[in-house]
Image (cartoon, rainbow, N blue to C red; front, side, top):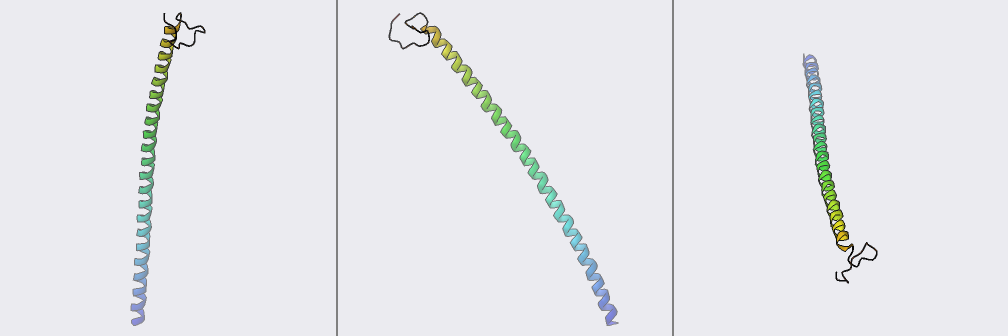
Length: 96
């Protein structure tokens, strides 16, 4: 009788151990999947944010270049015919 009870206890413990191991594996797998999804979402959000920053900086750079061109054109127009011998510089040394 003790032998049968001992075998029954061993069988029950084995079933419980296998069940717990399977549950742990499923829980671990779910946790890893959740972490991967969260990481990919974070990467996508960061990529979108970086793209927006790049677009903003690019637009600001284009505005600065356009503004510089306008200023250079304006300066060249002021110099033409007013002592600018080479037509490219205006040092303000002559008075028109």
